[in-house]
Image (cartoon, rainbow, N blue to C red; front, side, top):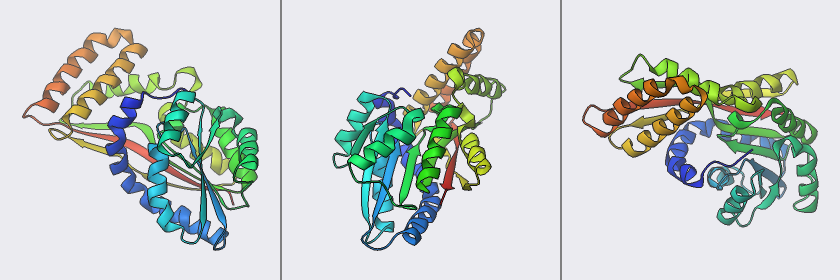
Length: 281
C-alpha cells in the first residue's frame, strides 16, 4: 500500500470528520461489545490500519475514549508506507508503530504487540481504518480477517468508497466517468469500490458477525467549492489515466463542473461510503 499525498489527506480531513459523525452508532456498538468483553482496569488494544497522517486514529481516540471508561487503551498505528507512518507517529506520539504490508499483518502484528503492549486478551482487540479498504487486495482482506479470527477481535472500517456518487445538477456524462473511475481503482488487483462489500462478504463466509452503515460526503458549493474542484480534478485525472480516449469528454465535463462549483449556479456532490463493523468474538 502506498501512501496518499499528505496535503490531500489534510484537505479531506474536515469532510471525513463530518461523514464519520454518521458512523458513531457503529462505534458505540463496538465500544459496548468491548465493555462486555473486558473488566474495569483491563487493556483494550486499538490498531489503526493504513494510518496515513494519523487523522483516522485521532478521530477514533477522540470519540472512543469516552465510551470506554475505566479501561486502559493501547494505541497502535500500522502502515506499509514509511513516510506516512512517520507522519502518523508525529501526530500520535504515544502510539506504537508498525511498518508492515497488510498481507503480513497476522504475524507482524502479533510480534509487534508481544514486544509492546502485550498480546490482547480475546475480545479486547479493535482494528480500525478509514478510507483504506479500496486499496486492499483479496489477500489483504484475508490477512485482516485472519488477524481478527485469531484474536477474537472486532474490526471497524469506515469511509470505504463505493461506485456511487451523485451530482446535482446531473449531467449525461456523470455515469460514464464514474464507471471509468471505478475501473481505475481496481488496477493491480485492488478491490476499489468493492472493498467494503468484499470485506463484509468474506467475513460472513467465516461466520463473523457483520453490521454495515453509510457515511457519505455531502459537499455543497459555494462553501465547499475549493475542495469540490480539487476532488473532481483528481477524479478526472484518474479517469483519463484509465481511459485515455475519454480525455476530451472528461476535460469538457470538468470545465463545466468547475464553473458550477465556483459560480452562482451551485453544485452539490454526494460521495457514497460504506462502514463495516466486524465481530469475530
